[in-house]
Image (cartoon, rainbow, N blue to C red; front, side, top):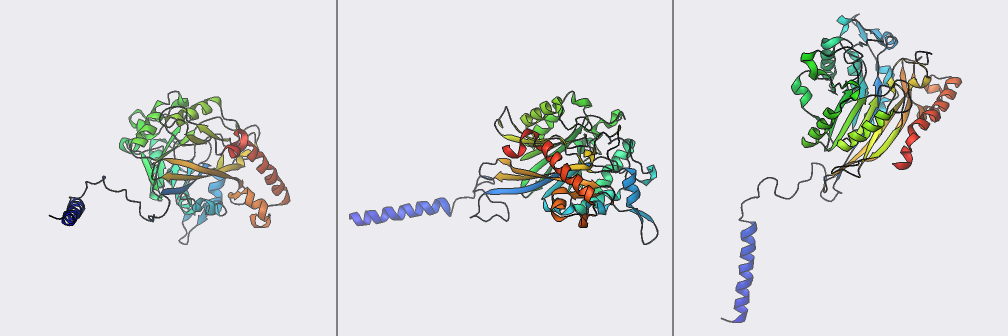
Length: 406
């Protein structure tokens, strides 16, 4: 046989062998083929998912707020409308892909009677108004969770969920508590949990211990660490923890807050969101010290302050006017599809202030100072107060050089 014929037969053999391994081989088992991009991501785009998260502090329902929200429906029935409170802040809440806050009241129904401090019960219309304003989730574990007893806690959860919101920190069943709450946000899986150090001395019934994630003064934080690990095993890319901790009206995080924040980050928490002091405390980046995530960073907001309330400077009971200010934390998230790593890629904040004399409207302070007083029903003295307050609050937020280090 001539050399040319031999070469020709070899070429044909190679082609047939290639076809045999591609066209005629059985398909690969699921999970072993090429990685498929999530829907909506073109093949030629960078393989990174992104999402934005907004978080705020205490959503309270003092009786003055309830009375101002009371109105009459077309049929003559009494209803409650809290929507004016959110007129000016809703655009920022709706702009985020997911928005979360701390519901520091119960929604236990009118039969219990509406009440403010010290045992809160707010009309359930608040939940629908929060949903309309842009909220997606509410943390419900705090020192007021048990204000209306066990039945009030359950009714609160039911009313929150009936409004189309998710809640975490209080639960209806043991199975509810033990199932990690993981929310898909643009393809990024975010786990949410919440814990409180107190229920104001109102005991959680022994046979309902599942109902509140409560650890007295956080003496044994191991259940939190175990839950964070469980959320990671369940597929969470990022873990956010609301912590009801610290001391009321203190601008400085207690030593135990800073220590516990570090331990939560070491255990796998990426975002730690504080409430209870009713005033703003600093933001801080902390570095994970141990484990597979050693060297990565977590973000801590030691206290986000009051988002909406009727609290004001009332010595000696409320020692500071800072209770009218809150922190709207805005976080950017990124997930690298090649490495599977999810990080907080950037973070910023807005300072807010509650206009108690105008239906408790929550005002974005920087925007108010830029646009002037007329649109916001403010006088010159209030504008001067806001200008000074903004500088004061930013100084507190930046105590640990948050903006410089981000």
